[in-house]
Image (tube, rainbow, N blue to C red; front, side):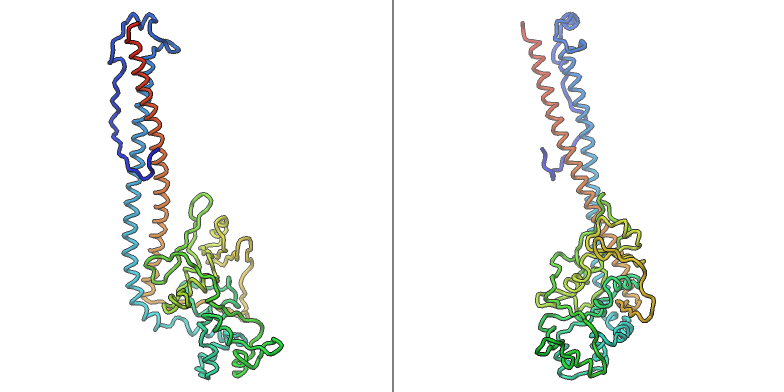
Length: 422
């Protein structure tokens, strides 16, 4: 057995094996009259040994050439991987510069903030609608400030999506109730939002319900409040050098080892988050991607077309969506039909950053980065396969070499027996 990491070089020159017939001269009478030991159909032991050694030597030459081919292929693949690493590093530096120069542009440009505010304000009887109305009209009552001090925001306003189709399908996946959920840092921030009487009923004159009454509104039904501190965060690795701190999730694979066609990424990584919320939103140092959006989407996969999503069913574990409206909520649950077209059916979507040269360049850099990482991952898989083939060839070569050595030893012993006096 040979070590898997061992690099071996093989010369293609043939093995030099001294033929048993060159080591001695047999009496022609002895070999022709049957005096020598015969093997089956009239071949002497010496002739059979010579034939066998020549065959083994030829096999070793072929196997040595095959090992050299595997090593050359490994060398090429590793050089390709090194080039990809260099390209990824250069692109990371470039993206960092774009991100730094684009922060002020992103913060000072209309990110369709008015549109998303209008969408939420139309939800007049929701907690999110009440809170947005109060904030937009600059209410500054002390009780209101205390009540909303730990509120980070509304889900729909905390993430942005570059593609309108993706924004729509992700909003459809979550549903209006989740899109309008209030997000708080910890449970201490949740408690002031609602008060109860002695019988445990909701006190509609206090907390956020009292705030709604003060502006002539009523919060109807339930509403969700997400407590970041109580969510189970993503604790794995993040993509190195990514200013958006995207999660380093493995790309899905079909049973045959191939990547599913049309896979665009994971929803949790396709959300653009304001830099202020990328780090240390919680007391444990986690940002919104590892807490809020990982909780909402987990490893939800995004595909270009519905047909791509359906063909990838064997590798979908936490649901999937497609840009043309396909939704698999989780394994075994398919969402069919079409979305509401009635204007009365409130449609709250993630906002889309306005087009600018900086964001356009950054999006193109992101696309290039995804392609490079995809190519690198496939190259690493090719390297693993090439190493297995090389190691297997080395093992077979070792076994064949042992057989060859035994053949030479047996041939030498046979010749000695034939030479020795009787």
